[in-house]
Length: 166
Image 1 (cartoon, rainbow, N blue to C red):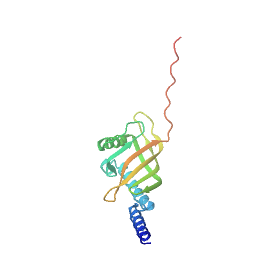
Image 2: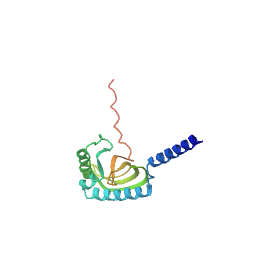
Image 3: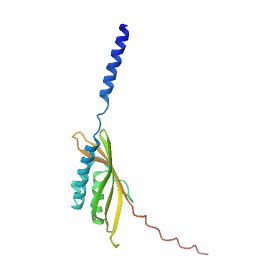
Image 4: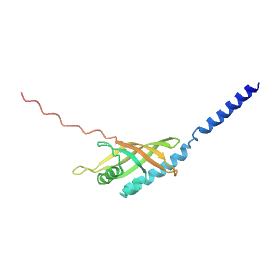
């Protein structure tokens, strides 16, 4: 009987130890609020062409995956992307439509609107979507570690190939 008591005590101790190892529950509404605030600051910084403020939301090892171009994997590449985008994309507005989080990782899915003003072309309204993956830092701040967006506009069509000579 004594050995059964020892086993029960050991199992109980093991269960207590294992339950204390589980990550704390993530309050998704708190995360949503934090990301909504970050999103509003991003839109404001973009409108002001303030690349330094935009970069405050990116982790040092972040990756930006813009459409029609290579991944930006350094801070300099991400800064360069935004500095170029200020010249051709105006009136940015974004809306977060979905947020989820677990532990120190979260993602936000959303949509954007703006006006594309390419040189030599008529200004064109644009809509699109984005996905940003955020990681909570040791100081509690959420920073983007992966960011991708793309337009809802149809891809440009290529002119028809010339007819083959006979």
